[in-house]
Length: 83
Image (cartoon, rainbow, N blue to C red; front, side, top):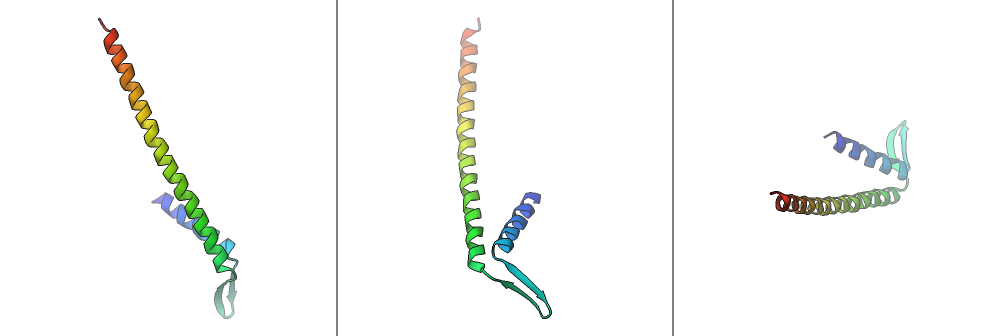
């Protein structure tokens, strides 16, 4: 839950900073000077995070398989060497 809040707030800050948000108080209004630029950066950040997440999951699965195979081989060697 805490990680989700951090991610959402980070994405919101990236969007606000890159789209040049302007707030006026009298009369109250919020304007985004370059909303397309902000959305573009937001999509780039989301895309990079998805690629990194997918790569990490694949690496974790491959590492687990290699580790499990190494442990099984070592156990078989130990079992054969016992009297």
